[in-house]
Figure 1: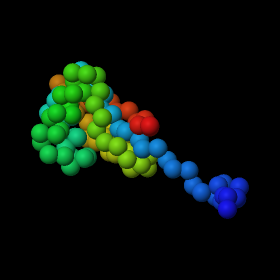
Figure 2 (figure 1 turned 120 degrees about the vertical axis):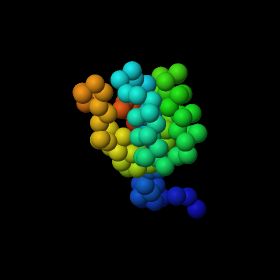
Figure 3 (figure 1 turned 90 degrees about the vertical axis):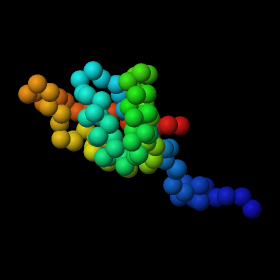
Figure 4 (figure 1 turned 135 degrees about the vertical axis):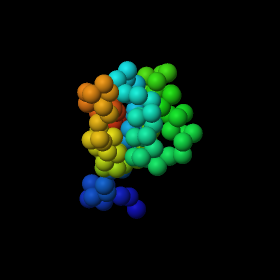
Length: 102
């Protein structure tokens, strides 16, 4: 027996996983970025340091992979965090990028 057109059309398409990438910038301190990554993702110190240094050296680092909904929530947490203040000036949000990983 074959699969009917109705059965094929009614099956939800599997959503690709999405990755949240940390982008390097020269505006934020390493301490601020590490604290933010640790707070949002609950990673151990060594993993946080490895990811932040990778972004610093290579331009970007894959922080997390999951569903689009969860990735958007993590991105919001990263970009709406309490801003870093350097020399009395608020620095904009940490650079992150959300994209499918497949």
